[in-house]
Image 1 (cartoon, rainbow, N blue to C red):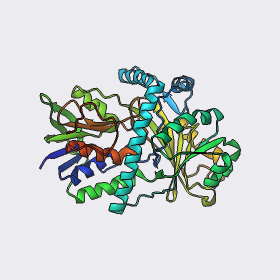
Image 2: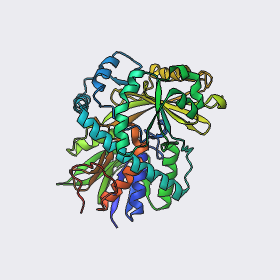
Image 3: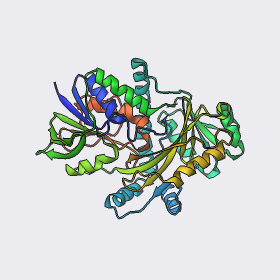
Image 4: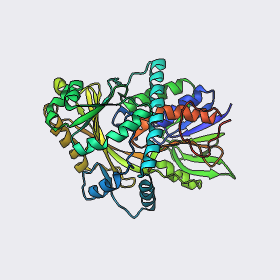
Length: 423
């Protein structure tokens, strides 16, 4: 039986392990944390959002980035550093801002999003998973006329590629989510994607990890990757250290790289260049203290780039991106900016009491399109670089990657890595 080692136990690593095991392969998962889903997958925005297919890199982005450089609470903040990888990433980002590249990237993300959402729904039905999911759609609302006008063209393109997305008036937005009546005078319009969902990615990942273990997947938790051995055209082994500091070398027929923001560093050790840079994101989790004034439909505040999800008796608000290397310290200015915006929009919902703050590193590519497929080394496969859409794209990416490892053509129209070939 072919043995596959998956590096990383976030949403992409666990879904990859599940589908590889379902294909009859012997699977081992390695992660430095004591359990699955404890890093980027832990407290994300909670949205399964095919409608979030407009990439950060678009024709209007360069001006916005320049305008936001001096703002500590900017939605997208480039904190310029003497970091070659950041500057190379930034140059690639600018190249992706052309209209043609934006159209191409939207098509990739819509296609992957539709496939992944359907795969998630099938997994939920087949395994009876419960992770505070809600299937009430996602409503994007706009408080800037310029932003609303700029959203029309990307929305048309998403509809062309199969994303169900309807433009709404302010009153229609309030009818869909009555909690928006608290900020009705600010809203200039919106768009609704009724097929999108929300749910707790952390709970999902841990439940699926348990099912993986029951199916025979081995887990090496509390295990750090400390080095790699490259052969002539393959990965000969991965050196790891367990919790006691004991070092050993893992051998396998193939390896799958699912290390999120840390994927690029490991790939460089093998002579492979991945344009992945950590985008530090924030979330705030609030208790539901005023049920009648709280939202239940998932929302997106497009002007401030914030997403709102209802996770049972919790309200999750997440967003902003800070390109500042691998720093994971909480920036209270950015945390408080999220709470301030929530209170502006929903004054009757919360006073900010009981807020729990979290930050994580999201593995961003310049195009927002992830790396999925075979690498330049014959036994190394990639499933990484999902940025802010790991929860949206995770199930489909894992399923497609398992097909590729097994030599099958995935049922997905997507530009896989150039080295990927199908029989």
